[in-house]
Length: 378
Image (cartoon, rainbow, N blue to C red; front, side):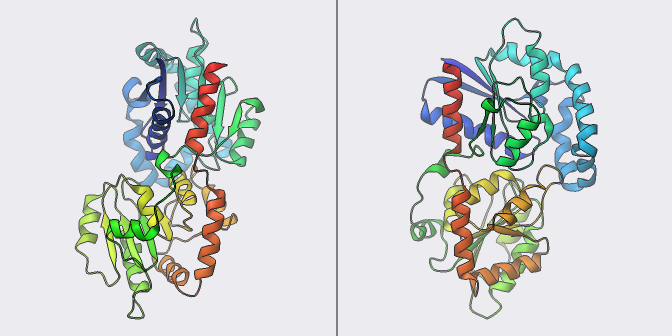
């Protein structure tokens, strides 16, 4: 049985979600043919203080975005590139440790900090292990994602393909196949009425889905309250509200005990997200690449309520310029948009939904997995 090692780190939920999606894709397409191991390289193999980076990420991205933008971006990414160059040379031993511990036949990276350190380690090893990068950013990506010596790079948009070319990656090694998302999104959905009945939703009212990522961060509560007011303003509800609070139990408790004027369903962390998305008519979320990719597959027009500076900024123009959604920070303005979409702008909502489906890549995970397997055969 071939061994595949997927390197990631919990600096944002998207990396682990992408790793798990790829593992599920291998298991579904090639059962019992590959042993897939997902490893948090930073936490499990790097020494202190480097192994503390995942703990710092939530603070930097949510509470100190200006500092995160400085570390992530800066003029031509000079600061982050310099830090990565220094750090990678100090951490080559960690790369040797993870390779020696798992003895992989192929390595998949779903994190921008894995390429350089692993390539430095490979240069010192007697045998070169095939190494591929699956970029988990949608339209903009840090230069550290791209290394010209990797065997393949998988990207989700033409913009990231051009970035790979600019970094010197051989065009034949770049594959534009979409973002790896849970294989469940590739399956044909059940009728919306059946899903709504099963999920305890109102059958006829259009539904808005409110999300704050896996941790339920951001102004989810304020947006929910504003939507409740706007959708019930005429005395007869224009729609219904679904809130996914993720692991934010305090938020879930507050919203569960709220006196709603609009039909509402409040959930914590869910493992049937495709059902909830297919049961709704639009989504309000921050500009996370995975959620956007999933929403497009489900034909959900998108209201982006925020973004992490640097890595998610480019997702805003991608959504707006492709005519599949809008960007708005104000909870009151978001609620007004939802009310218009469910009222006089229903036709506009349907048009955006069609454009979203056309942009989606429901089979991206399977396409990436098949490509990697072919690479292992060559």
